Length: 511
Length: 127
Picture 1: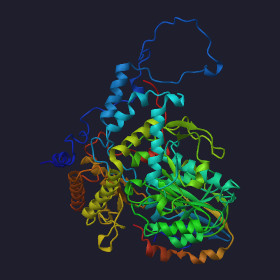
Picture 2: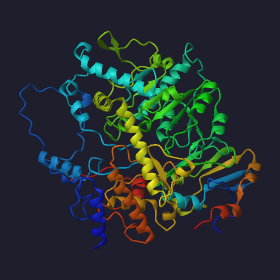
Picture 3: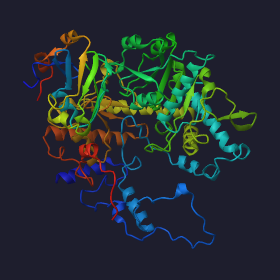
């Protein structure tokens, strides 16, 4: 049996839907760029003859047309269909991309979002004509508040990072308010060195200085935190469970340090998938947090949108939340603008309704017990994989004998394998040959793989993944050339990442 | 031995080459090998005050982004402008043309706390 056949056999075994993970290289032709399909004079649609008087365009709209390719409608459809066939998605493969929570999104979410009452709702419809949608949004606010253990929710922010920025604006408005926090000098935000890059970016966008807090054994270094907190501290932004996949058990003490100093505790809710129905951030001292609905509540992951990053806050921060809010009086729902201390509007209309409908559907379909089961299973799956792999793939923070477990994800630094002259990227690329999406790499620590199976994977899929990883370890031990040469089953192998970063080519001529 | 003997070193892999009251800072071959191909370098502005142990910039590679820490406090008097167009200088010549910044030290005795080349080489042997 050739190596390619052997790999294919494992690929077939691993892939739960029985399709080949990816074509053998060269099996299908490279798809040209849409710009290379340009034929002068070809159009996607024929417009009808002008049957109204011609009017001059406003000056602002006159100029050179964008230099777009001219391609027939069917050719455009085929182009994007070809590309879609090459997509690697959780709907056809295991996708343990740590930190991203690539869970399966139930299709009922799509059915709900496509209902005409939602999909065709005009964003400027009068409240009286949109009672159903407003009721749904009001329920989203209330569910997210309940899961957080916090008092008020804004559904406007349209991404996790947008939620961070909105929450920071709310914190600033609170401290600037003489009747509120009354401490305008509090303009520094603390963040652990394992924080998501967006935390630092959001602070900078908000005009806040950021001070990094060092970690110790993957957790916040309490001495460093105590030394950093002072009367200019506005908040600590913490991700818990953190980016190393660990629940920081010091969180109550951390909250106390912040609160004693007059500062607030902000939770980056990126890893809420690990604690739904198990722990409420409000109960462990959090004053303000954001959700990433695409991670926690099974809405689409979309490379920047459309998304939703709702925020939840304690009652004393509620007056500063964005307007409009969805309110309920008796049985009537309305968009309320009556909030004099609000930071204003942060998104057109009331937010990304289509995404929030999906989150609502997921929450309702799971119910309270179901949501708890989501987190328990996500954590169980991650611990199961860590336990199965740790003999070959060292887990610096996971050690059952020492009662050190992980939350919904874990990191491995496979030092023994790397010492055989293999690069981390070789292992990742070899996973593609076996039909598995490579995990997050080199973050939050060097030379690590961050593996997050999520709750939606079956025991059978997890076991197949373990067999793939052990097989790759065996290949490395045997000095197999297949690992450094991977992937052999993808249309393209190794991109010129250095060239792309140093000398990017961002335009392409037509034809 | 690849770590120059006239330099002082940090565990975060910055080298410090003193000349009078001015110190030139870069990152070591060991650090560059860990980072692999550098794609972007963010340096502080000339005139900026920096403090020992506090991040003053970032190095981005195809593999990771790392902070740059000075081992001494002082004022930035020069930065390596060539890195903006050619970050690969760091890979080609980390102890030479790939230098990062020059700092006018406020307290040159801070250098004494840093590792010498022997200690650094022993702790982080270059391949």
